[in-house]
Length: 72
Image 1 (cartoon, rainbow, N blue to C red):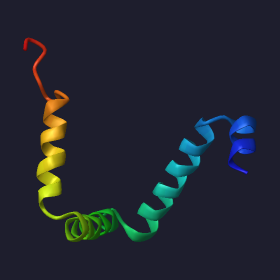
Image 2 (image 1 turned 30 degrees about the vertical axis):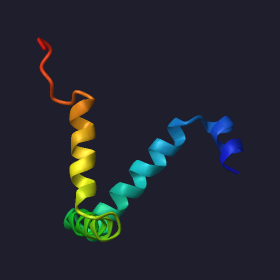
Image 3 (image 1 turned 60 degrees about the vertical axis):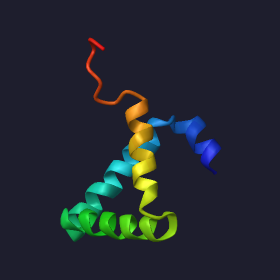
């Protein structure tokens, strides 16, 4: 199971196999595939959460200080 594999190979194992899987998908389907599934995911999120959801998470990100200058 996952726990035994993590103990045997370490957490880096999952990062490595994830990258290999991503590279394989990119090679087989092309980089445009990620744009397609991202768009579908965004449309689904908008349908289920409403367009206000994006406004809410945008404000939340701004409150955490993303992009704020060091001098502030």
